[in-house]
Length: 307
Image 1: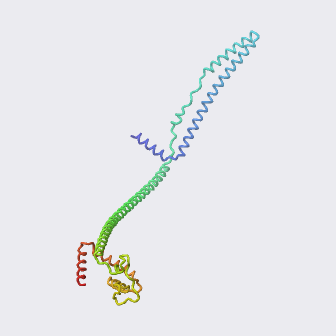
Image 2 (image 1 turned 90 degrees about the horizontal axis):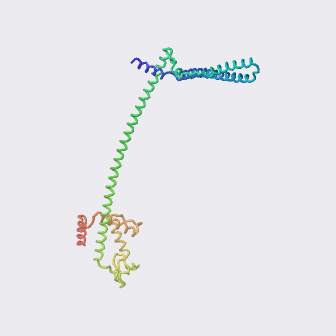
Image 3 (image 1 turned 180 degrees about the vertical axis):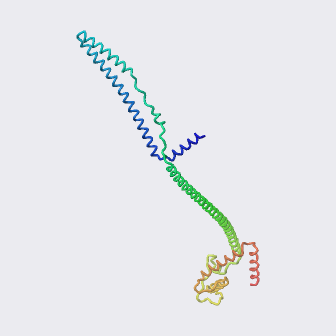
């Protein structure tokens, strides 16, 4: 248990130790390894030099034996040869030293960076300040995240409400378009029915006198009013209606339609306004067969009887 605590404490100290100190320790270990390797290489070089020197001495002695002329020279050469051969054997028998144990250098305890308790107190104070800063930063980030979530929820709610309102408006517009189309179809049907009814009534009415007065058929138009025709509404000798009478009747219909008589309005303009007012009244009466149309027909028949 104590060993585990010691390992944890060492790991903590290593985590707060400056990197410069580890770099210094690594440089010291590298220097020690370099010294060990230099000594090892120097030993190997010395052994190699001794072997080379012994081989050279033996070769020199052998060369000297070839030039021995007397018995004494031969004996001295043989003795020197035996000594050189023994020295060479001894040199060759010498082995190179083993390579240094560099792992031992790595295993050495470099000591601790913190030699004074004040150093640890300073580190603790620095860590405490860093922790407070991180706590404050975390709290600020959480507050910003909550604000962003609230803003996103509000924006989503507003978008949903706007989408619902737009959907309701679309539904209302679609209903209004459908109603307008239905009303348009009804108006078209009513206009077609009124046009058919008007054509049928026109077919039942007698032909105007001026259409057969000239004996030329329907191609002949109404006779033009001459300057000698009366202006009091009476017809001329051909039985036609004068232009003044037509204008007077058109003005009366114009006033009956609710319009004020105005000299600047031409007969054609009055006729267009009267036709527009008739179309409005027909649309108000409704299609044939409806209650309003039946009431209008009853009123019209009563007026015909009065006439």
